[in-house]
Length: 175
Image (cartoon, rainbow, N blue to C red):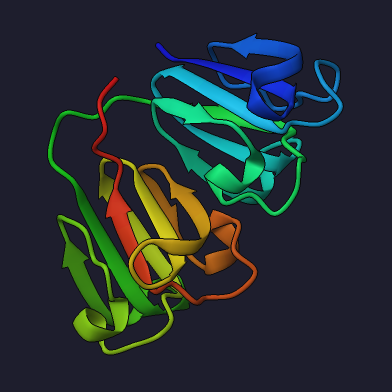
């Protein structure tokens, strides 16, 4: 499936922990995380246990310090492998909660939500096919949120603290 290695110190030094599946609580394996090597797969790592807090998307590669994955600190407490998806991608976004207001369907990247949707906020969405990442800033920057297929009636359902989504894209990297 996937393989990710967490290191307590920068540049792949110090105590390490190798993981190949979802883990809701990494606390017992290391006390801090300052570098990561992704050997296979696409991953979301989370600042807190149970897939909460800041989220970061990582694809195959080396991340010698937490700034390389745009981390705010050295706290990584849970991780989730993103399953491969080789089919099409479809998502419906809505202006208001509970799938109300203006709706638009997308099948590919959206680097500037406001230019396409004419709204700065997305308050609900329905992921019909594939896996998607929402970003708080245009051009895939800022806080990230991982969305699996399913209904999200309000922004808190995807772990956001507000409804600001400025860009999004499907996860299309293959192992």
